[in-house]
Image (cartoon, helix red, strand yellow):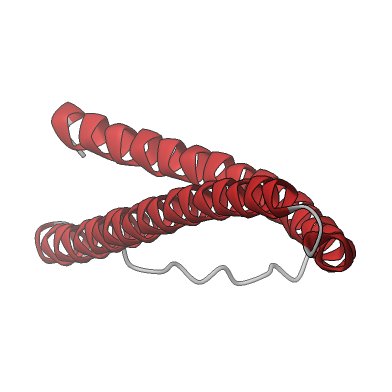
Length: 143
């Protein structure tokens, strides 16, 4: 195998390792987002509970209703922002997985080509340098 092929294989291995590292980082980021979404869900549940309690008071206090409505709208905007971020991360994960599988396929194709070349070289060597004849050793009767 030539140095350039070895270097290319080394670069491919490095790229595969980098891709795996990026996938791990993305996975870690997704776990953090899940935790954030759980906190948002709990926050929304608390907000909904607060809204139920506020409805009883709402008849006498219109300003309180307006303030809670604004709070809910802000929470929704944050949720939508988090969802867009999650969609972006999922897109990055998909692209990274695609890149990884492409690199992996190229890697295995290179190994197949190397095996084919090795097989051809062995055939050529066998044609030009046939294996030596086998010598039969006959045990002596003296031993």
